[in-house]
Image 1 (cartoon, rainbow over the protein chains, first blue to last red):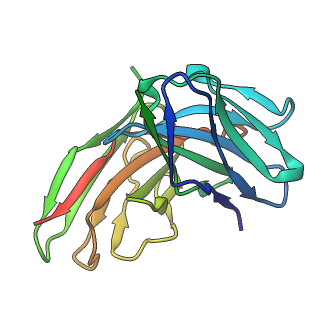
Image 2: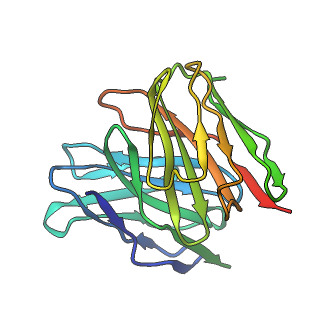
Length: 112
Length: 113
């Protein structure tokens, strides 16, 4: 069965600093991998996705993620965070009819 | 604009009462999903439907029921058998095929009175 692990429940970063959110997946074949962002009381918005090919994928809002098969990781990065980036971030994997498997999320706090 | 509409945004349930959450999409997507979100738990799959008149149980289907009479609509009923219904409920849809991107509604917060 697929599983996704986000080891950090909370991350605090100063505005303007760089960000890396960790994600590890467990899946036999090459998975479909996604990062979603959720603002409080809202649905989820797709930041970026990886299906195959180039292992460094670019997303919206200046985010990128790198697929590393050897480490079973798909970490999300941003070179300089803004206060508006404060939100809940979900790493997910998919590829089946039953939708996506979600990590438990990482809550990002931005310090002024 | 195309999208997914969930209503109501806030819903309150009394003890022993069934309540129904609405989910409508005009994206012409075949597949629709219901997730439950609890703090610190991520999203857990309740039910999903790949086609009209067919649906499958997800990981936490007990105490819930769904129907899929129309392609656009996938309502979720939280029955009195669900003893801990307070949560944020998210509906999603996607096309079948190579693109696995899920489109989400804005959610319904259900609370027990």
